[in-house]
Image 1 (cartoon, helix red, strand yellow):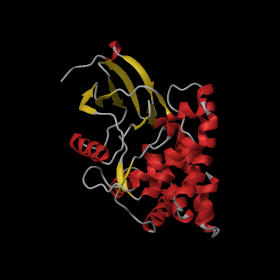
Image 2 (cartoon, one colour):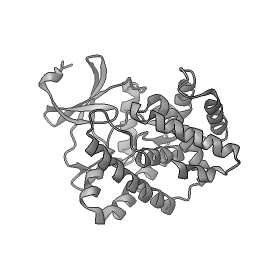
Image 3 (spheres, helix red, strand yellow):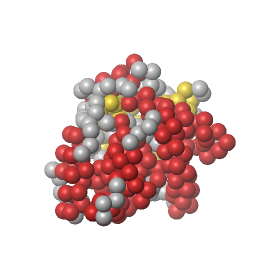
Image 4 (spheres, helix red, strand yellow):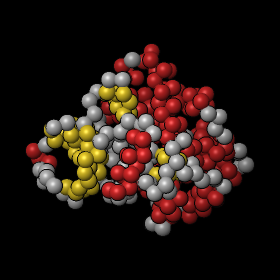
Length: 285
């Protein structure tokens, strides 16, 4: 196993959860800022299953630890993200959004066994930790959770246009550190949350964040319309999943988004108490 000196490597990207370094030979080093739940064996199984089902993912060479941070040596994907592509070619947004949603729904058809933790595992792990919300909100979320169906589909856990890379005619889906198995509507709700209220990434300039937030809101609207075109999800279930995923992001999301997620949870709880149907809740994100 090679030992890496980060001071001698080129930082090529900084995301919400990890930093990417170019290590040459067509490879990158991805370093997560937090521990990842998946074991190396689970990740290998997951990537193999995805490739068998025609989903393009970067090749995973090895997992390791650098300066106490979990890392992966992976294939470097050339090209640009779908986010950059759509911003530069706005007239193609409709066609690209169809492909984007189609890819997420393709994942929903892939059943996952032991290649990822279940969303239920992750949820109960969070419940066992220190409370990040009030007792009233926590009780409300637990009630909503109890009403939701579970599933065994592969869910990416961070599905947004910035995690789709275009290399020639191929679309690569990157950043699988938050993958889980569960109900596919949960992943759709999470994607909508991430685009509707984009978290501010550490080190991002105010101008950069303003631009990303603007495009995020536009993508969220186009994404939601296309999801409804391709699969008629139940709006009440969708809204309930936005509640659960907002709750989960108060624990593992970025510091910049915690206040906004808690505010949304409190809004939904108030709407519930006023007997406003859950199919309307997502409009208050």
